[in-house]
Amino acid sequence: MKRFPIAITLSTSCAIILIVHSESKSNLDTLPRIAAVLALGIPLSLCISLIHERKNTKNKIVYILSYVLGAISIVIYYFTLFKSFEMIPMTRYIAISIALYTGFIFIPYLMDRTNFELYVIKISSKFFVTIIYFGILYAGIAAILFTINKLLGVNIPGKYYYYTFLIIAGTFAPGFFLSEVPQKDASFEAKDFPNAFKVLLLYIVMPIAAIYLAILYIYFGKVLITRTWPVGLVSHLVLWYSVICVGIIFFTSPLESNKWVQRFKFWLTKLIIPILAMMFVSIGIRIKAYGVTENRYYVITLGIWVLGNIIYLNFAKAKRNIIIPISLSIIAILCVFGPLSSFSVSRCSQNKRLDNILLKYDMIKDNKVISSKASSAKIPETDKKEITQILMYFNNNHGLKYVKCVPPDFKLDHMEDVFGFSPEDYQSPGSSRTYFAYNMASLDAPMDIKNYDYLFDFRGPRNQPIESIGDSASLKADYNNETSEIKIYNNGKEILNTNIKEFVAKIIEKYPSEKANTINPTDMTFTINNDIADIKLIIYNIYGSLDKFTKEISLDEANFYLLIKTK
Image (cartoon, rainbow, N blue to C red; front, side):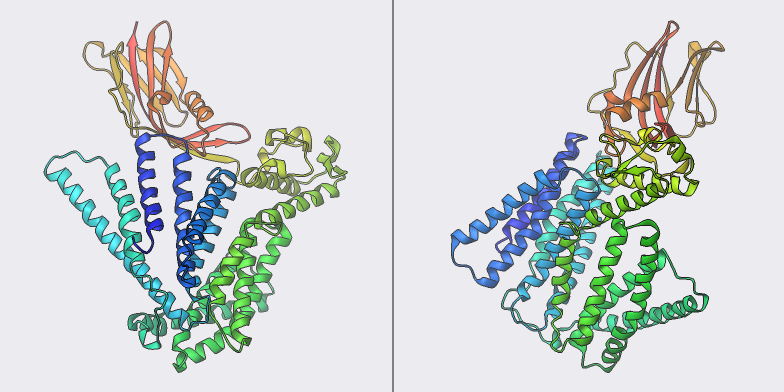
């Protein structure tokens, strides 16, 4: 607390805010966004603290001003760049987090200091020990709560297990981890290398990496013989293997006196380059066919980072491994901001791809689509599918306003008017569907069932209708899982036939499916009145998907109550 008071205060605040959000039962994402931004302030404050430690700042005004500027930057970030949890804000959030946490690692060693790798090993080992301690502490407290609940009969709601997790993660874990961050004047020598970690690297990780490299070369030979260049999965397999290899080289640097380490590093830094070349060819084929997307951009960028590090390790005479985390931090920021960011490059690539398709059929003039049924009739099914997928990409990730050739306020359901064909038949399976999972929030007050005589419980799978008992044994209710129809009979006569999808549509209208989760009970309750009966439908939870084009609802599961009063 004395060394890093702001970081621990912020982590504790995050836990408190998430608990308050859970207790408020709000569907708004305001509190979670505040918690996420405060969590981003943790590595930022750590970086500022370590900078002051390195410079041995004496001026209190400079010290305080740096934290004030940090706080202002966090506030500006919240209101300008983190307005939702959608793809672009979240990607930027992750990239900034990577840059800041990486900065936390390398800032103490920006000056000329030796054995940076041993410092990182110290930090990493403390991190993993923290996870183990955290897991044991949480499991122990959870076991205590469970035992009190089951043996002593004290009702302990499930939410308290979640709150326990948050409190330990927000208070104990950061305090325990930060307590052993090495001081600015700490020094490390080769003898400080943990023996267990040394055994892990030399006799487990490095042999596995060597075998994996041999397998990749066998596959590379197969590619050359068959002349069928790989696409898809192989890029990721090669990429993550290469990243791990850079990590191995980094962590084994203090062990360079070991002959096995010397041979491994010498051959690995040479043999991995052709494998990376194969990866670039593979991803290049995908880009040529389908353009650049964010995922392909990250594969290419991370591949270039790995290749740059390998070249540096091969040719640099005075190697400083601190270059590896510094370059990663810089690239993380460049990938999400500026004209060369993944978003800008991907949008430009997909717009160009769409224009090229339309040019083949004379459907674009002055960078705008020319609506023509005759022209669109010439488009083959494959290109219609590609056009649809491009528009779906923009709709799901950026917004259709970034499609340059379409009219203003263009929407997906305008496709037939603008492009001359409907998108339903050309979308990828599942690409047009958003999935929802609506659950009724916990009741804070008793459920009002006055004026109703019978309750039918349709929670869980039902293959048979439910019949009333007692004085009115003739009342029967049935729910068909396949058609989503609810039917109610009285004395064999049908008194209600309705589809639960009608009510789900009202929930979706009020709570967009990609945002909602726990819903206020009043918004999950509907009344149906006719001349024969008064009926109340109370949806407990419901899961399914919504087609963006047709607005068709598909239900996977529905659990609900029916309250009925016959007239």
